[in-house]
Length: 217
Image (cartoon, rainbow, N blue to C red; front, side, top):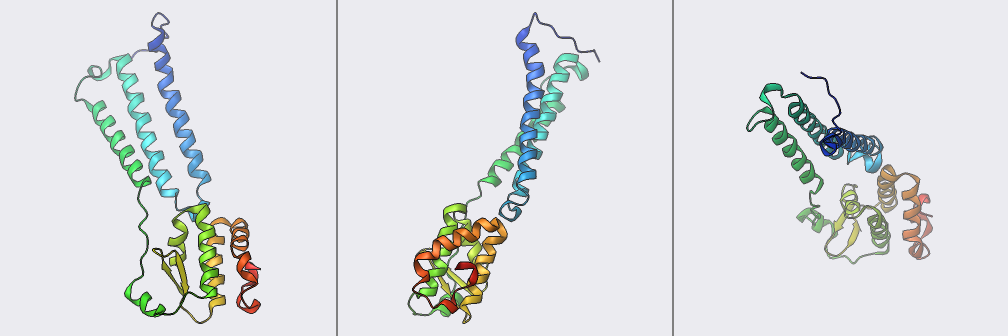
């Protein structure tokens, strides 16, 4: 093992000797900051995905550091073909590839199942259904298709994504609307409440006041 000495007769090599680890350190720091800041965003649904990318960047940092160490010191016979340094790079790129793939998981739109269709029957799309639909559509402008997926998790709601409609399938529609609004408020806090109010404003005057939750007025 040799002590590192800068050789400015080879400026490009010296630049990369410092640039590789510093550049990787910046990436890891950004990923760590993103992980810490995303823990409570959207209910923390991105936490696992960001943590995967952070792990991939750490593996890349280790592989690059090992490469520089071997290339400079000649340890373990130098950085030859098919030694453990190649294995580190293979693992690092595998983890990074898996991390990118799981970030790009496609959203599968929910469809009305037989039980939900039976609960709706042939009834028309009613005013309170329209209120619920406007809430989901308003949230979808912020969080995209995830808004429809979240709506489907609320008891008493049936989602028809093909028609972009929401149906209230329980008798106490006021409670269902409160639960729907609360579902989004859990993700975005006060901001989601304002989005809900703006989304349903044009329908409020057409619906009896006692059927509208206070949080939507």
